[in-house]
Amino acid sequence: MAKKSVASLQTGSKRLSKAIKMVKSPKTGAYIFVETIMAPEKVNEWLSKK
Image (cartoon, rainbow, N blue to C red; front, side, top):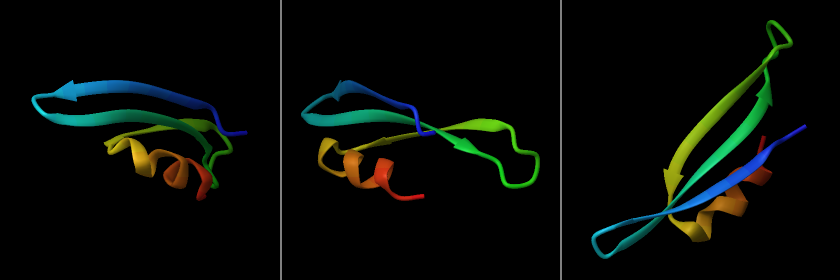
């Protein structure tokens, strides 16, 4: 159900990753994409929670 896509981004001296997760909407049943930019260490934790 969850689509996993991770891209590496570099801004100056910081390393960041953009993670995209596909989530099913409880109201309509349609799928939506949730995007966020975060530290690479936190990506798996974010993708695993609902």
